Image: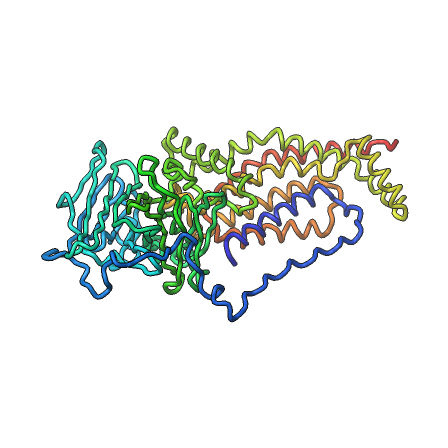
Length: 566
């Protein structure tokens, strides 16, 4: 069972208990709902349809032009006397190895983050032999693999950027021995960012395109590699709006995400390799599309098509690094949505909460100089304090509903055979006594967007990756001892027990749920990030005093007896 589905089940169960505790007796049974028509099944493409079997390239690719300027496949794509060598680029954020054969990146080690799957820093390149950012030129239906050419490099030697260093540019150039073809590519590196500016020039070819290879997905860096593989995906942001995300394990045949795109990316749980259009100064055009084809179990080779101008110039940017929201937002083009929080239909609601939650968590961490575990506990207590007015309002509504329950039962028994009169009397009861069966739970539903946002924050936020707390080695991973899910389930049981013991009558089904619900939640939550379990358990513990107070108020209402019927 996927983690997201388990979370949906958990939310549904919690909402069900929340609503049920506000309605102690069964409500009026409505007419049988009309069953929804089943969704129309998608018509599979005809078996003999070649367009369905092999996806075509974006409409702008490829044009019908002459190939006379391109090197023949049998020609040796090398420079006389040149040997392959590796250039090392070191910045405060990462260490990169760039080969002069094909201007291909053989390694990217993000030095700010450790790898849990191997020694040293987190590595992004899955296959060093083929590397990343290799290019291919698409003209007249053919692709010329530029990643085999041996380039000259200027300046020679390694690059090292310190914190205050100015941007540095490496220029790599290939010239055909007979002068019939050339390719020049320039990488500009910055000391304070993971973005690399790329621009270059080719012979003037009408409506050509350049494929930028992102490899078969990013290298695994987490202990739970099966879980990491389940989140490996490629994505693209359409220029007309809408981010599409596709799991690599779902790619079982070649497929194309057609442009124009604001970016295309391959990503893992916490890291991303993205291609974006060039800056305004470079006059970079939107990307033409993303090509994906199977490359083994849970793998797919991803290539992003960047447009080449008619004079042969092109420009794009790459982001090779962690999924840090602030850095991705600084890159622009909504790159921070590369790892979207929540399901598409909920994102407009969840997105504002995610921004606020991350800001509060980072603010508390930086200002109080404490670990994220204590930050989560403080955040849980603050949430209870801030939501106290809503909880108080919900509690008062619950007390009114409890007080009028005898009147509600009397009306239901008296007019059970007269639905029209029953509805009128229910409306009058609502008006006279403020009875609303959902009034006690509606204000309490507001914290659920926060809980949903936190689920995705803890699952994908790199700031919590590898953060220890007490016996927990990683707040973004499940509790290895399963103590937090047990504490969460026990605190949920205590809350329900305190609530139920203050009531005169409780449905047998509700009594059963008091025992079953916490057990179910433990089994659902035990694979969730320990940070989420820590937050939820802290919220439950912080709610216990409030629940005792509500139980006392219920006893007072019960002692006062039901209000007089009008």
